[in-house]
Image 1 (spheres, rainbow, N blue to C red):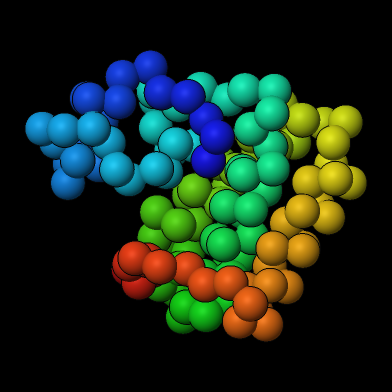
Image 2: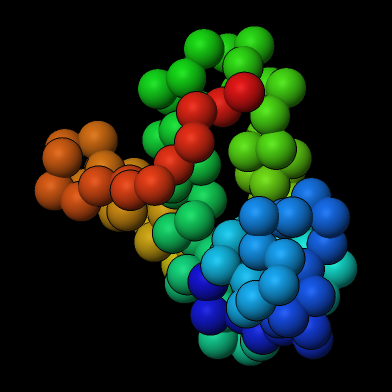
Length: 115
């Protein structure tokens, strides 16, 4: 997501499948080690689109009770708080990526169901 990590070899317990090696989860906005850079917003906006797509293809209660919902909230807050002057550009990037996902032009891989 074009973010940095303060400790990529020690992911939090919620990412326990990465223990013993470099973190492969890449859900940086949920992680206490995540660092946002000035140029992080395009990839974060695209992740927001992916989460909106996951939400639209998952049962509402499953999504609402998943870490995907928490991640979406975290991303929305982050984008609003860290990049307040870029909201139009962020919305455009998010919408463009979401349209490509919905049209089948691009795909999400290795996604767990929202449970």
